[in-house]
Image (tube, rainbow, N blue to C red; front, side, top):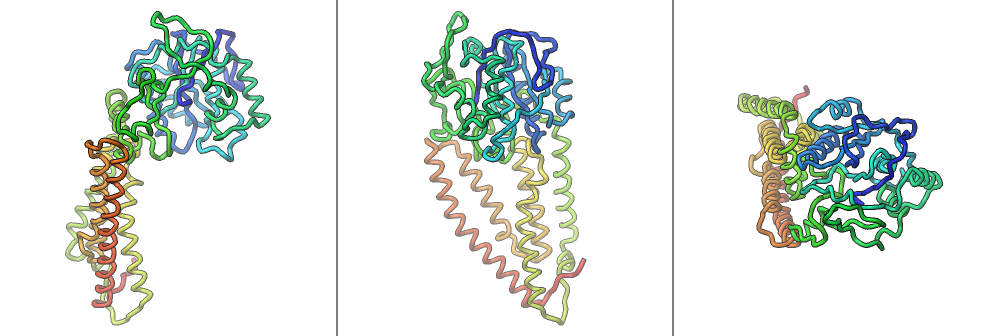
Length: 433
């Protein structure tokens, strides 16, 4: 369940594995909570968490905002969350739940979400993922009633089940909670009372509260009849989360997440970092332009000797310099900037680095830029707004890829042939250093 609702009774606050959870300045009876897990991509999840918090504040939710952070998270990001007055989040640091499924899971430390059963200062808790995108206010979820009778006893029993190695289909939190509460799918759907009273019993959330983004791509639109269309989730590959600039337009909804960020958190903190690759690319372009008449002399020099090994090495360097022109920009451009800025910098960087290869090895311009033209064409094909269904778009992409593959092969043959002719005709060799 991408959105997990936990209703807990008000009992005495205790500790999470020795970490005191007595909340400071508790302002509401209920809370929205998310888990911040320490990973090599801490900054990306820091941005995602702040956007989630800001979007809830913008919707004026009537609940506290809690960030359950593992001890792996750098203090730098936690202090930023705590000290940012506009966020208003309460950060709780916890030890990682002992995970017996490390060998089979895709996502690290997801079982820390079980700490939601220990937020006993609140009447109700709505547990969120950092990639949730809220379209509407969802405070009616606090009428949910019981969620399989959660309590401190349930949390202790859960940890005991983990210690005994309870079966888990996916090795993550969703598989464990689904196995722990096996009858959830048999429960009636949750529909809140108009008078705001809390429901009794167990319920399952309608799809409108957990709209999987993959459903959108089937018909390129939301057609979810169950409950209000309130929350979008982005499951799938970790490197295609909506905050990465390259995820759009492959994932069309990514631009909606960035629009939400623009309206809440903004991009001011990253603009100075964006200037660094821009200056680097423009500097390389200027230097290449000024040195164009003699730049090939840095890679070639005339000699009376002939060596097939040297020719092979020069060809290898030339080909890899072309490949690097399309890979290096991904490593330089900040990952969480707006897609339009990210793709603009990517094209600028690729053209810049390709020009270095073109002028250094005296290669033809158009065949070298064919991959970049192909990338631009694929983005236009994918981003076209007039497809009636996702299948139509997929067929268009496959058709374009087939046609482009023929052009790409022809350009590659032309580049290698041109390089070979140049080597044989001029008997040139690379200059060491």
